[in-house]
Structures are given as structure tokens and as C-alpha cells.
Image 1: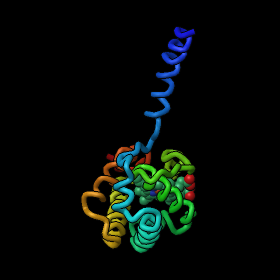
Image 2: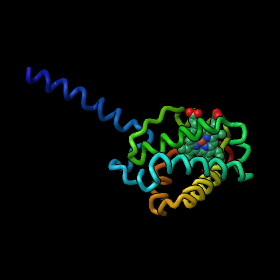
Image 3: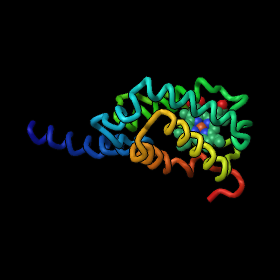
Length: 152
Ligand code: HEM
């Protein structure tokens, strides 16, 4: 019986490891300190509101977002940011490929979004190092999002 349990554990372990590494947005701040540096849920609501205002005001990104479901995008961003920063949220939206593959997003569009996000984080007094930790966590998704001409 003991061996049966051990065998079951050995079989189950790789599957468990697989589900854990399959998280497309790994948690980078398990103690939630980064989430706190962003002001928790209230902070993320303000930052994503400001981000959307910036994206609409910027001629480089306006057309992407003017006709999009902006509340849905904001909700998804809050869930993703909260999750990676250790705030304990779950992302329930589309994966990054599904959400962006039809949009023809180019390298410069991605850069423009990052600039709008930096502005929003600055406005909401997120420390520079905390900003960079979030941006670094988003960087690997670049390859799923940028599908347009001139991609890097
Ligand atoms: C790391 C960077 C990015 C993240 C984390 C992100 C996240 C998201 C999320 C969560 C959604 C909503 C998915 C859903 O509906 O379930 C979304 C949709 C969308 N994103 Fe992004 N995004 C990123 C970069 C970009 C860039 C660079 C652009 C364009 C400049 C962009 C344009 C859009 C548009 C237009 C939609 C709506 C698509 C539709 O309504 O079908 N995103 N994004």
C-alpha cells in the first residue's frame, strides 16, 4: 500500500509540475509587496483608467482602443497585474494570442502602449523599480502580441 501511494505520487508529480509552469503569467511577488507598491486594487483601477485615457489620447494607439471593449480590457489587465504581483487574482480572459492575433500590432505600437503605461504608473506614484518589475513580467508576452509588420 505504501508503495502504491509512492507510485501514485511519482506519476502525479510531473503533471503537477506541468500545471504550475503552464501559468502564462508567473507570480513574481508571492508576498504581495509589489501589489502593495501599486496601491492594491484601488491603485490598479486608477492606473488602468489612466492607461486607457493615455492610449486614446495618443494618435499611435487611439484607433486600436476607440472601438474596443475597453472595460473588458481594463478588467483583464487588473486581473493579470494583480495576479503577477501577488494580489491573489485569477485572470479569466482570453490568452494573449487569441486577444491580439487579428490586430496587426507592430513593434512601435507595443512601445507606445508601454509608454502610456509608464505615464500612468508615474502619475500614480509607483516607484520606478516596481514599475520595471511589472514591465519585465509583461515582456515575454511581446512575441504573442506583436504580429504586425516590422516585428522584432
Ligand atoms: C503586455 C502587453 C499587453 C497586455 C498584458 C494586454 C492585455 C490585454 C487583455 C487582458 C485584453 C482583453 C482580453 C479579453 O477580451 O479577454 C486585451 C485586448 C486587447 N488589446 Fe491588449 N495587451 C497588451 C498589449 C497590447 C498592445 C501593444 C495593443 C495595441 C497597441 C493592444 C491592443 C488590444 C486591443 C485592441 C484589445 C481588444 C481586442 C478585441 O476587442 O478583440 N494590447 N489586451
